[in-house]
Amino acid sequence: MSANYVNSLYQLTIRVKTPILDFIMEPKMDNEKRVALVTGVTGAIGKAIARRISENRKYEIVILCRNKEKAKKAINDIAQATGNSNVRYELADISRCSSIKAASERWSGPLHVLINGAGVTPPRRQETPEGIELQFATNVLGYFWTIQSFLEYLRIGSPSRVINIASYWAGELDISDLEFKRRRYSNSQAYRQSKQANRMLTVAFAERLRSYGITVNACHPGDVNSRLSNNLGFGGHENPDEGARTPVWLAMNPIGQQVTGKYFEYMREVRCIFGENREAVEELFQVCMRY
Image 1 (cartoon, helix red, strand yellow):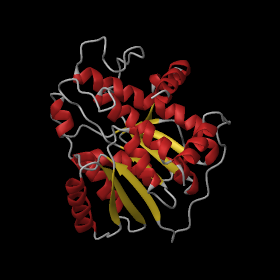
Image 2 (spheres, rainbow, N blue to C red):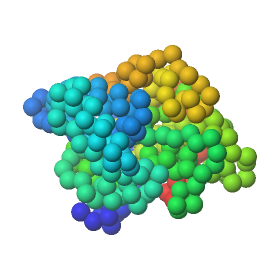
Image 3 (tube, rainbow, N blue to C red):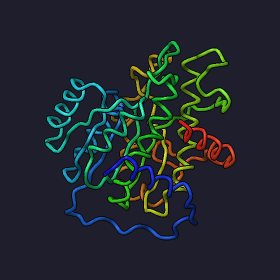
Image 4 (spheres, rainbow, N blue to C red):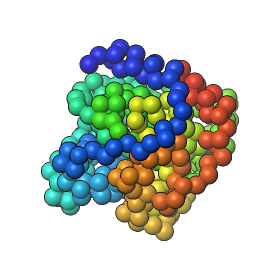
């Protein structure tokens, strides 16, 4: 499969808009293996998500990770904890479009579940080798590029689903200064902006992909004490398994295939005012397309 073919397919999706599906997709056969791709697995919540899904032997888990040694440790830990040997890794730097595309070109076969969970909260402004502010590149464009690059495989696996890890701590998005070139950089402000963007882009992708039987939903994973939250100056009163509960529920429960373009907290759908501003949603989508 060529990169040009994936790009052509994706360009088709941004032109197609159809009414909301008024039916529930027929479930896969019980004996059919399902494949889940998860990013951010070297973090506390991401690892818990991958492990919880891996507890179901019908799932093959693939983690997307840039560090080979950390990836090996993560898949070994998950396999030992669950007894599921169908766990493997693909190397990719989520902050770099070319790296994600290269990983997608190595892929073959269907993809049934994509969970975007990679995130960073650097205390000082940093840039990728391509000159993009690191938090925006990882937390926002990384989600965008991963959906884009793996779209064909999600279509092959349809009905399939995408879950974007967002947050209830979202806001302050400035469409004119997404990379903090004008504003003074604050890692907490950049994080809140990125989580608002995740929720907005969830709506944009949901509208474009529903005709293919692909649902796209976002969720808050809970208040977990993690390296990411510590970088923001917070602790957390929930453990990683509690944080994984809602993402795993959306990944494996029928609800995750029955609704699209929604935002969830603690396994409940919650109104998202950011996604309701369709003009801003479309503007952000088009800005991300230019990257």
